[in-house]
Length: 322
Image (cartoon, one colour):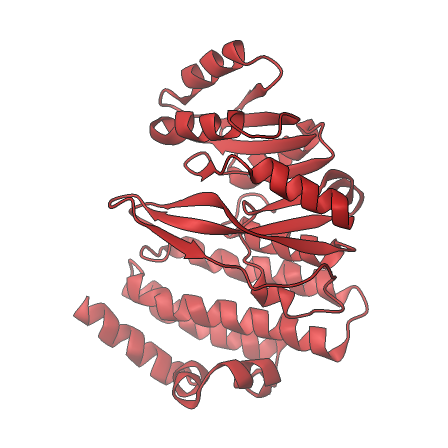
């Protein structure tokens, strides 16, 4: 059985389409655990109606608002399936999502199976096919590049339930970017990871996406990266994997440095860039010489990323132009 965990918070506009996509699966051995995180719109009544109509298929759990990390963790506790999936309540899944991913996991003895997906523009309805890099069944020690080749969102993947529970892999609570640490830990813990070469998730790009809106919650990334460093530092790593972990941290901070052009406060934008450079220098003193970073970014990009003054200047100019 596949347990599909769906966090809900004020998404009545999208919820029925999401639930219908789960109920329409070609694989019947599935349960939807829908955790209502204190919604104040009509989401609770929609869940009551679906739970009554589809007993045994839809299981609603209601709790006070605690945030998406706590909601997903509650879903893992409630899950009865051999595998777990996490679907956002404003997204939809293809009718073959369950069948294709579970078959792949069973046939290849996987702890984790990944698929491609569509990004769907809410305004236009246009779909963009996002292809995860191809790889044969493997693990992170053999293929450290998976830290980058596999996206850090939890929803285009299924996970063996026992792996999550035995390794105590859970979502950090009360922080933004809670999916980053969870997904990296799952990738690192899986004895075998595989991929289905089909787009099986319709990921909705809504107005107000975090790539276009920045606020003080961006500072949460530092605690998320601390957790990642501690997790990987607790075990034995090859030199190549160590480089990829370092590069992941470099890349994530540089992405958010550049996105400070969308930051609400100019002061917060400037301070975040300052703190991100300090973080890298404190934890990765030779980060500018990281081989993966040097291979993937050209000279011009590295000039921007290597110098805090140039990065701050770029963001200030971009903010004025915006």
